[in-house]
Amino acid sequence: MRSEVDFDPATRGRQAVLVDDVASTCGTLIEAGRVLLRAGFEPPQVAVVHAIFAGDAAGRLRAEGIERIVSSDSLPHPSNGIALAPLLARASSEFAAARAIR
Image (cartoon, rainbow, N blue to C red; front, side):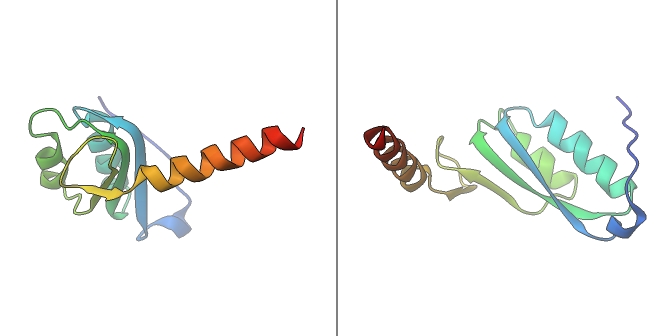
């Protein structure tokens, strides 16, 4: 697969953050990282909600130059760095409060 994307020249040399909801094989993240690197960006960082990381998917990301991978703790993984429980608790409380106001 070959992807072509036009970037604003002012953004070259910056570091992008790739965000994915479910990362299993990481093929999409790997290809997006390659596109960014070819366009002159610094190696991107990756943020993932559900880090399935089948096989050596996280290792494949690192092999492509992606140094920082952060995931939520929805699935246990060494990349876990975002705790979902406080976020879900706050959202639930806000939802309950909004319903009570009606």
